[in-house]
Length: 298
Image 1 (cartoon, rainbow, N blue to C red):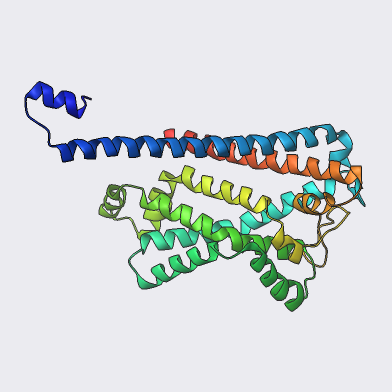
Image 2 (image 1 turned 90 degrees about the horizontal axis):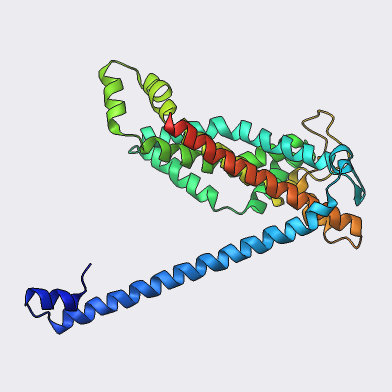
């Protein structure tokens, strides 16, 4: 692209000084903006690399067969109970929140102009901003104490599902809105009912985006600690199948609690738990992107 000065010399027309000065200011502002964005990217990248390096440096030396075959014994032993509890709570929360979130997303996308749909969308956005520890307190008052479930897997899974449902609903809504209107019009023109249009035309067309939202919600629930402290507690034993009246172990509790203990074994378990959580979250994120690309191509 020619500069303002060269363009004026080639065409023979004089460029006003005010326009030339505005053009130079825009170039300066553009360069300054790119400099700020690039610097921010580098700082965030270095911070992420530092976190990953610290976790890997402390976690890899602690990896052993005992870590995956033995439960914790005080501040030593393995992490079998914590790994099992994390998987139970994560899968349980997604099983509860998945159908609810997808249903809410379908309703708010297909009835987006209705008053109640706008209310539901607004309340969902508000719920996203509620601190997770407040949701944990809510779960403690309603389920642990109110219903008498005590610390349990069901109380923790329901609390996590309340936290991640708005994310699933919003992802589903945006996925459906992004579809071209011709899909709906063609299906209705062929005489399809509203339910058939949604479940046989629209949802299959955006399966990748919906699954991505579910997997990202799973990664989000896997990294939570505050809601589980109030609803799940902690246990050094593996799960025996009871949904209520039985606490569970989970990896984020090991990170939060064991790192403050004055024992080397506790610190090793904390770093190993952090490494496992990071690996699980990374695997879920990569899986969501691969699934999205595969289904989007199909």
